[in-house]
Image (cartoon, one colour):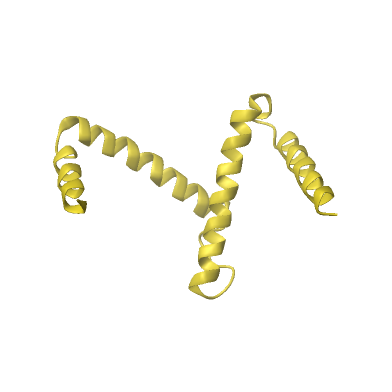
Length: 100
């Protein structure tokens, strides 16, 4: 089953439509990795060990996903870092309140 999928993908990416899809996908993926590296500290490990690096990577991915989610849910605060910080503080406050 796996080999069938691999063969299908290989033949699909040889078509013009597949080349276009691959080109679009690579530019998106490269930007996401560059954003993580340049703006979120993926360039350097904070702690030693593979397990801790996995945790750091997952935390960075979570931050990136939360940023995108906030932009979708609150389009009026798309370009305002201050408003985004206020929303984040409110969410943290509600989380901490629930824990007490």
